[in-house]
Image 1: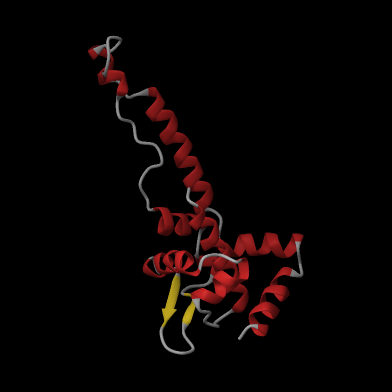
Image 2: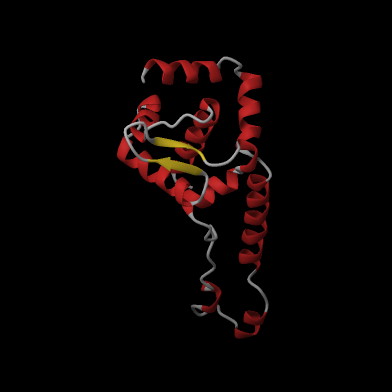
Length: 156
């Protein structure tokens, strides 16, 4: 998973705490001292996926396109990293002197194990929303939402 996923989830959290307000990519990037151009690519991917809305103009920027309860972590991962499987079996068991054509009719045990693990991972991410993460942050660090709002208010 590339680091853009982390940046994207944090941006979604911040935008959720800011409500309907639009925030330019450069402002979101400045909050974590991230490269604005790179974060903007992640934000554009989230907008293409319908997670964020992109608003043009002098007061433009990004905001959540739907409620945080309706955005899963899997939605964010798929928007940034795509939905291709993490593991791709290339059937190396069919190569070399140890290959046995009789075993090719059976599924590759390694491929099956990897697919099972990835399915569990995807289900877990699909079962957690941005709102769930927000609630966890708010329980463990109750001052964070206000800190985020104050920072963005002070830098308008």
